[in-house]
Length: 494
Image 1 (cartoon, rainbow, N blue to C red):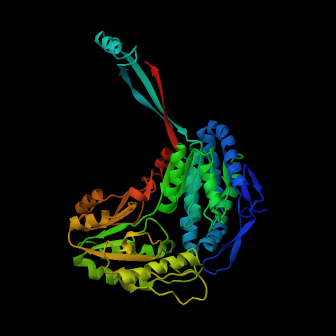
Image 2: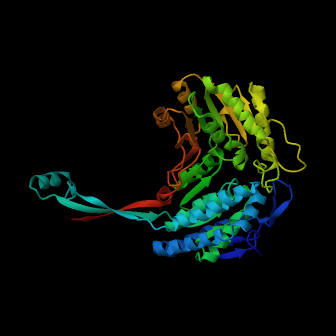
Image 3: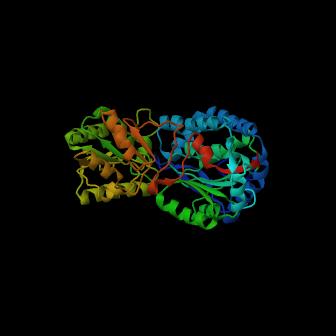
């Protein structure tokens, strides 16, 4: 069987016990391929294979592991067109996005973690005042000038077996962002891809196999049934779970991890606030906020979906955002001039549409979009702008995960900050202001894991993660190496 039709367990491609299910192209509604449905026993076998492979892999040198990751980066980078076509068909992303932001970023992440970094640090020697026979003896020793001097070393050790549960919006970059740093630190992984678009993840496993990943170091076991993910999290062979997805699912995973004292890395939902002040560069703000409409059709947790506009600029910002939304071509993601492709499924399209209707009932004004495009096939939602919102509306408080932006007015800096922080989420917020000092002052007061000042761009070495219900832990850059490791102290007498 080819990659995508079989499970990857212990270095071999295995026939799935549960047969296969259809993967649907969100644009054409046609079958892209057939994905394997693992049984619970097969998931547990993958976890056991990862456990068996962990010791030998952890004992390899960082340079050996880096060489494997580097080869994987070259293989993926050499097949961008092939892999991007599959990603476009599975996810509905535009061709340009699939090439650059999915497959291209995946290759870049493997290259990044092929870079060897120090894994141990010397700690300055310290007088040990309690290490020579208890407190009273230590105090006497200090008084007599013979207290012990202790040296110490901090060493980053791999966590062990990591279950990686990946998101549907970017199967290439998201999966690579978990596998690459985990392997670089000496962990082994069991990957459970999202059921909507798992075929790309199996192709990544194929590339890793070709790159020389030893048997059991990487395992991929997918399926549409919930028992697949549950087994991958619950297995006693698993030491850590890295999850990207909704807050509700993350909370259920965290409960299981808590019972087993398993490490967690959770990148969950978002409802990013974009605070736009009267003195902002409106064209820049509109272009940044407008990425919600185009980037993965709004199916991205970092999107600035909740716009807080100071009253002096409110009307102008709403007008320009509405015009921007109306100019974006919605349609076939394979056509070069398409900007907004479909959302992932009919069920998700219906969910997004239900939120737009809910916004109307709550009193919001639909100033752009709001009606299903007249296209013959596909799960399309047009760029939609809801104005005159308040922060207590459900459309302003709940993650819609589609090309929908809500706009809320505010009067002054204090109110803008209060509204931005009045949310269950805290992943990435944004501030637009011509006063840079004010922008940074406001940014420091926002309860979010990241803040963009006059930009929606990201620095890929900066820590990434959320406050509140947007997640637990940090990854990206060196922070991902920290996330997939434990710190061990080695101490000796000086």
